[in-house]
Length: 479
Image 1 (cartoon, rainbow, N blue to C red):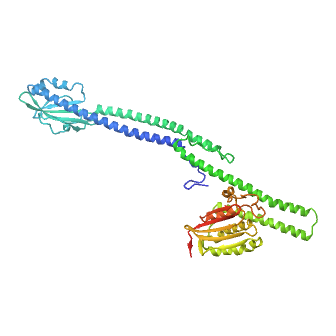
Image 2: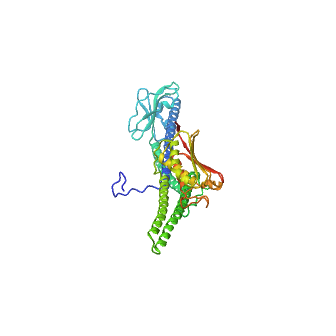
Image 3: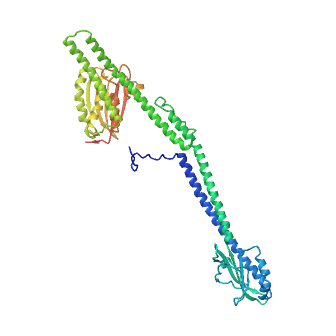
């Protein structure tokens, strides 16, 4: 057999184990978490470093302003630039340019590979803010710059101050940080996957224990149950469902075993009878009349075997839901009267009075199965009613539908047998056992028919007085 979408002969890939799937899921979650946290940390660090650089840039410009204010004149900058260059000591990436208002360069600490852009200068005596820091593009990376006007000397001669800074050092630090972060991410994801696999594998130990116990269960050990009290909550419900399934299987196997044993026992009796009678008949020559009597006797056993097989097949079809209902509106009084007429001769032969009492009622039922159910009850009642007794068929409307009743004035059924009389091959006692005519399936068939109709069957019996079987049908209507 091939699977849709799979080439003939191709082997389907083996699905991943649940442990590996959960471990991979945990590692994927860990990677996603590490990525999100790493990205957040990287962006936060980059933003804080950029802000710190801008604050430092502004501070240096303010310091240069103060140094210029202490100089006597702009020419002093050219003559002695040391006070200004010392302000930038330790900052090789800083570039300072001081020019006179006419554009003459008074000081320039280093040369840039690219010219600085013209930006708006901050007026003198105006404090610098982060908004006064601008971007510029050096040869590598990005840079920041500030342009402001400073006042020199007591007379306040203006000069143009431009202070720029390349960010190559900071970018190098951030690149190193990103590499370290990536390595930490890989190591963390690997550790998370390994630890997740180990944890999941350890957690699956209980599941493997359940599987081991399930593998130990077979048809001879169906009474074994899983211990759900000590199981984790996630497995407890599955264990309870599994135990419930075992309960049903055990009950079904026991019923099937009992059914097979009872069937074999009941089949053995007529078969033995047939064999014994045949052996006796063949032990010596017989007359034609004797052979005819033998065949007549055997015919009764064949009939009994046929009924037993037919009843067994009927119950098997009901159990396997292979018996379809043909519901129709049935005139109950007419059906009861028809059954009365059918069994009247049999009742007269054994001295039992058979009566019918029913108003005109209708029920939604399969007429053939209804006749079979009521017929089984009537036949059973006549068989267990002594001469001079009475078997009554009746019907009445109820709040939920309609109810048929078959009563007899027989010896009754003891209370301890009532819960079991609808079981297959169950016989209440030796007095009620009539193996020559009954295999113990009649009442089981009646109950199966009522279950097919969604109806109910019950029995009331008073030992030594009477027994009444009730068949309740729902969804009926009066006519």
